[in-house]
Amino acid sequence: MKSASLMTAGIVVPGRWLPGALAAASAVQPLEQFDYGDVVLTSELHEKQLEETHSVLMGLSDDSLLKPLRQMSGQPAPGEDLGGWYHYNPDYKWGKDEDGFAPSCTFGQWVSALARMYAIRRDQPTRDKVLRLNRLYAQTISGDYYDKNRFPTYCYDKIVCGLIDSHRYVGDPDAFSILERTTNTALPHFPKHAVEHGKEWRANKDQSWTWDESYTISENLFLAYQRGAGDRYRELARQYLDDEYYDPLSEGRDVLAGRHAYSYVNSLSSAMQAYLTLGSEKHLRAATNAFDMLSKQSFVTGGWGPDETLRAPDSGDVAASLTGSHSSFETPCGSYAHFKLTRYLLRVTRESRYGDSMERMMYNTVLGAKPLMADGRTFYYSDYNFKGHKVYSDTQHWACCSGTLPQVAADYRINTYFRDPRGVWVNLYIPSTLRWTQEGTQVVLTQQSRYPFDTMVQFDVKTSKATDFIVRFRIPTWADGSSISINGRREKVAPTPGSFAAIHRQWSSGDRVELDLPMKTRLEPVDPQHPQTVALLFGPLVLFAVTDNPSSLTRADLLAARRMDQRSWQVKTAGGTIRMLPFTDIGDEQYSTYLRVA
Ligand SMILES: [Zn+2]
Image (tube, rainbow, N blue to C red; front, side, top):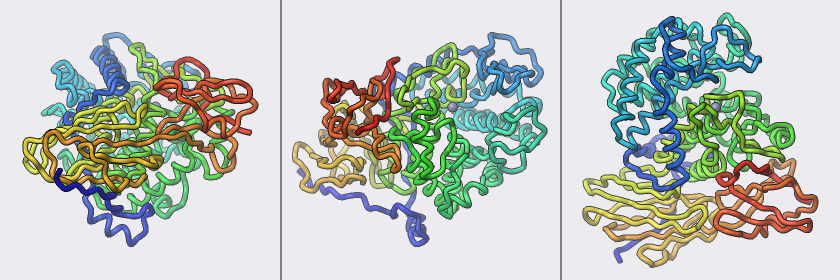
């Protein structure tokens, strides 16, 4: 065996962004993302979500997809109406529970998702659909669309995303010219700068006309600039940065309370792009601080924002929501925003805790979302009420979350691995194959496991010739007693939980790494004020109780949960037994995320 060395990846910067650390951080290049096509996933749970969302989007007719855009632009609009949020109703009244809340709002996200899916699948029908939709969309561009739109910058932002993804992943030669026409047409109908949620900036029909999200649009504008759409997009991105929000965050002041949850977390990705594109360390500080503030008010699943509202620290609001609300976490949109934010933070800081956060949210929220249905039924909220249910919302057909779920499903690939010039970083343990070129050598890394239902993850390496590089593995903070073996020989130095463990060696075909991440039961309280309201975890999984709260439950009962089979556990109490399941295995039964212990 050639020399192998195990070391903890250098903690490049401390967890807090002190001024002294910033210069050091700036000197380190962010980790690079892989492309969608570089990673093949073989996990049934992840691939099912991709196949289901792809199939729904491919099944929607072009005329149906274009219908509200054509109607709002005063054009003939044949074809079936999708209904729900997607429907255009010029007389829509907020609060009357009728179709037409956000006509066409998911159009750009669906084009984006299809473009990403084409990068994964390489199938002609998907590519043809993206190219066709962009051309048909281009015929609808009009100022009327923005004037009649409750959410002009929101819809524009998604269209920008769809077009720049079409350019990058489908090679649509017209994407940037369509983007340019879109921007020229849309801008006169926008506020001149970011306007915070709920503030009036034009004549309103009702309050819902103040809910546009101009404070989120910079991210995709920065990306448009980076992908070559022109300097104009960098300047527009700068113009719409919401410094009213970022300035206090960058100074460590928690101004999250009361803000709309998904969109203000999404806005932190614009701050990250301000750092990546402009080098603005203030914006990086804003995002890192906000992540810490968000973590303190997160549910055990990683979700946040009960009733779509961020909360004041130590307010007890999150605990109160366990009885007061069933709208605990806007799951597809929230996880989409959370994955982007943590992906940026992981790339920039190289801190494994952001990967831990992605993993927790993945298994305990969106991977267990009910599937998007062809009739527009959309999984919206995860329910962390003591009497919780996994349900479709009756009134939210084709809601915002139907736009983000297909993007989330495509993005599991780019969350799993990252790279730097010296090698690759394994962030998520999902059965998969990664292919890349390391200084001229073709490398294939195959990952197999039943993780998180088994603790052992196996990696097999193939190389076109023996090559020196580093593979880093995320060691979750909970993974005490973990170990790494190379070609059957266990490394002497145990990896440190809460870090990336680096294996630096000459790799050649046939090399095998076995990573063992032992899992134990542990408890987490909903907040420090409610130590008796706890959730049970096993490794990265939250175990949900399929029951009402039993009267005589103790911490020891929960910690002694017995595994009944690969995917279910049982807790014995003085009053009987409780079945415990991961979120992905919850069906229609009532469940409780938290339990009150004596
Ligand atoms: Zn949503």
